[in-house]
View 1 (tube, helix red, strand yellow):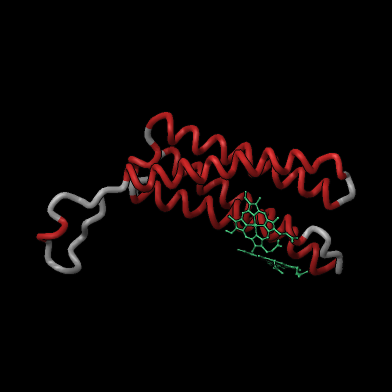
View 2: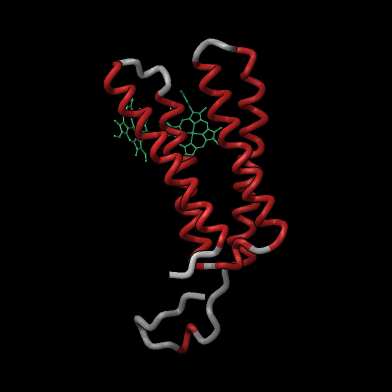
Amino acid sequence: MNHTPRSRTWFRLAALYFALGVVLGVAMGASGDHSLFAVHAHINLLGWVSMALFGVIATLHPGMSEGRAAAAQFWTYNLGVPLMLGALTLRLKGFAAFEPLIGVASILIGLSVLLFAWLVFSRIGVAAGYLSRAPGESSLS
Ligand code: HEM
Ligand code: HEM
């Protein structure tokens, strides 16, 4: 499987968030303190699950990683997610002043997801000749 440099980065980030999310899950289970469960849930879902999907989709469709829109999608997500998780952790630990930062970070993530949706619609085409291929024949572009 030929990974694009961008998809390899998504996989590495996904693995790091997975490790962090599971360590936090085990720590919550062991300590009985579930106060950070929302952080755990979003490390796993915004980090591990979504980033692994970005990596798989970029591997199947290398065009998803090309150009400035793809770079903007990558950077808004990778600034927004750690900012959101850090600010949410501090907020849940009683530092109410960090609440606006959660909002700002959420907007960055939202922008990234809108860009991602645009990239899916504009960059993933149906391979030429797909409709004339035999059933089961590979058609990945
Ligand atoms: C060894 C691995 C894991 C452990 C020990 C663990 C442990 C926990 C614990 C203790 C909670 C808090 C439950 C509560 O207070 O209601 C929790 C919640 C949650 N975990 Fe994990 N977790 C693990 C892995 C994962 C993974 C891999 C994912 C996602 C891919 C995940 C997604 C969630 C979600 C979404 C919640 C929130 C559920 C809710 O809304 O109540 N966890 N986990
Ligand atoms: C900008 C992105 C996101 C923001 C700002 C956000 C915000 C929130 C908020 C405010 C809650 C309620 C928390 C509570 O009542 O304690 C929540 C819960 C939840 N969200 Fe998200 N979310 C985001 C993205 C996602 C994504 C992408 C997924 C799944 C792939 C997800 C899965 C969940 C789940 C499973 C819960 C219930 C568990 C929990 O309360 O932590 N969220 N989210």
